[in-house]
Amino acid sequence: MTITGGIAEADAASATMEVEAYKRLYPLQFYERHLDSDVRPDGRPLTRARPTSVNLGSIATADGSALVKIGNTTMLAGVKLEVITPSTASPNQGQVAVDFQMPSICSPLVRPGRPAEAAWVVSEQLSNALVSSNFVNLQQLCIVPGKAAWIAYVDVYCLDADGSLLDAALLAAVAALTHLQLPAVKVTETGRVVPLKNHNGDAGQEVDSIAKKNEDQIVKSRQRLERSSMPIALTCVSHRKHLLADPSAEEESILQMSLTVIMDTSGRLISFYKPGGAVAATSATVKDCIELTKKRVAEVNSIFEEAYEEACGTEMMVE
Amino acid sequence: MVMAKVEVGAAPSLNVAERADGRSASQLRPLSLSRGLLTRAHGSATWSQENTTVLAAVYGPKPAAMKKENAERAIIEVVWRAKSGLSGSYEKDAEVVVRRSLEYIILTALHPNTAISVILQVINDDGSLLACAMNAACAALVDAGIPLNGLLSAVSCGVTHDGQVFLDPTKPEEQKCKAYVSFVFPSRRLSAVPELPADVDGEPVEYGILTSVTRGAMEVEEYFSCVENCRAAAAKVSEFSRSSIEQSLKGNRDGC
View (spheres, each protein chain N blue to C red):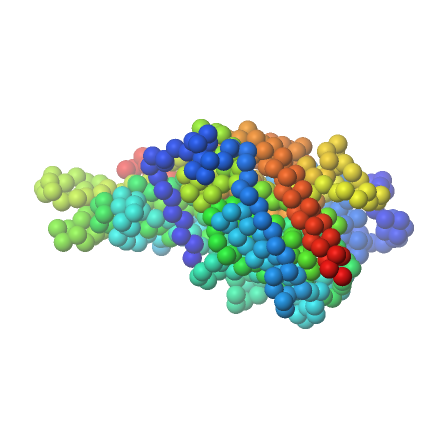
């Protein structure tokens, strides 16, 4: 590699120093020299995201769950359902409650006790993305209008925080909600919601038989949530004229300007979140970020469809 | 725990041509700024956009807490106090947004090992709250005499269901519209600082988007139209805060 950029002192040092030591002493120069040759220290081209994997149904006890990995960043999401009385303002809607946790296992920067600042930010942006994109049809969560509805508690746990937390957390939350199955229930005359027995998918027959036997008893069969266009996030960091997609924790800490774009599979812009930073984004940067996000949405969507097919495709056929 | 509630159903349509307060789509509400209201604070300011009012106080540079101290620069702390109730994820997120935006203008390297605290108290929220708070924080920093490399101007705008963009939404308008966005732009620099480039990638500095926070979904073109509209309005906001500072400085001189 040819020596370009960096301060004179760093340049002089680089001739004699070992790579590890140089990286520690001059982290910014270390990165700049990589970026100038259009490559990142982990071998990725600047605009490529890390390998992404989605695994649906990782938690057997949850109603819906997903484990998502983007590079080393790992998020585990679970959805738990409870029956509530819907609010009087919206009697025919259920609710979705999102919670994001960063336990101290995920990063050396997180201490046990009060939630880290990053956890609040991701939590707020995560619920904003789910609300703004209308990903969940809340009317589908209604069991009996005005009487009973589902509340879906979406809990996202960060197991390994290696940058681009919102991207992974959103993908995990969306995947878990897609994997979610509303259980088959019947509503008794007293208004209680009782689950129907479920032996290897024969709940469907039971639903039918009860519905035939007792016409006025309300029965809901097991169902997945309607699939609507999925919000997908991409975090970018920028340094001078370079734009890097999907930064690792190290890149986020060294290169100071980061922003997150969320778009859905139908091309709408769900969120453009840039919380200040050392540099203001030019129009060209904004356009580039949106273009990169469009590509990323297509990429993640195909990864997700594959995972969905694998986890739920066969199940659908049995039913 | 964050409750994410969505109102589904026929949203009442919002007519930009007939806004409730008679403004046009590209009109801001009357701005007002008063500084130096608090006696114990090193600097303070209230910024109001009609019924949206935020009081900001600045303390510092003061000794930083041991574990937060930075030997190379001053650290900035932002506390966001809601009008009522405990602070949740909205407030924490707003604190981060304000802090990281202020880091852009504060010359933190001048005061190593110290802390600068900015306390924002929401007095009333009638829409465009984040923009109002950001402007208040910037005015309070000026009042405190913290060395800055420029000013910020914050503006927000809404997008109606038929894709029209209107500036400075009120609370009812925010609830009725499809999406709304808050922007922070660096103000145009009047004094020529030789070492700073006037343009970034062929664009003036004040065109750069320092901060962008959106609510609701919109088309990409609508977002760009928001950027254009807010950029134009930001110039007016910056002009207003600059003339207000100049006036009060003149007042001080006359008083002496």
